[in-house]
Length: 249
Image (cartoon, rainbow, N blue to C red; front, side, top):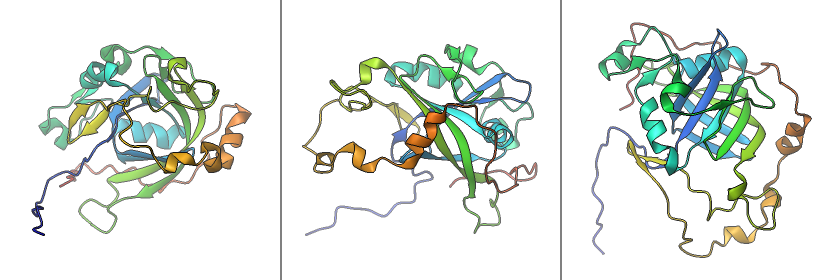
């Protein structure tokens, strides 16, 4: 059989992941809101790939808290309004060249409504169908084997402390299950925004296993419902170097 594949060198490998709007609290008490898509989940933990010197990770390093607001395709325009905006008043040279502008009022510009969280100080975005309050657990290095970029990107591990879901997304007859046929995440696919189909392609063998089989202790740990202090492990590197740009590809 002839192999139909070709060998290429794409500058990016954004193969399709959910868009996340991360809300954090600035040093002056105001809110920052930033779109990203380098995110994945395991249990009640999430890994977030971020440029360490940006406002969002700096707020997370300082406060140890954030909210992961997951938009649906209905919030695509809000995501676009936040694109190429930064909450950092001193804009890094790379972002300047890419056309980024400083904007302190992200919620207002996006047309989204900040509402109070229950376990963290950062606000939630009312319009996003799913909102995950979280505390930072660890900061991990990425690309540390490359001296040109070591310390500039980081993977932040966060632990979910509260899950808020629009009631229309619940599976019929279940209090704590999201119906995948009802939840339509906004997907970033090679810099472009897409929705997903609500039709199941084939019956999933994995879905034959009850969700509760994967339940982890973090779920019970999150029930305390108290505002958690910023006690977590991070590298101590803020990632800021005015003479260095982060080039991914």
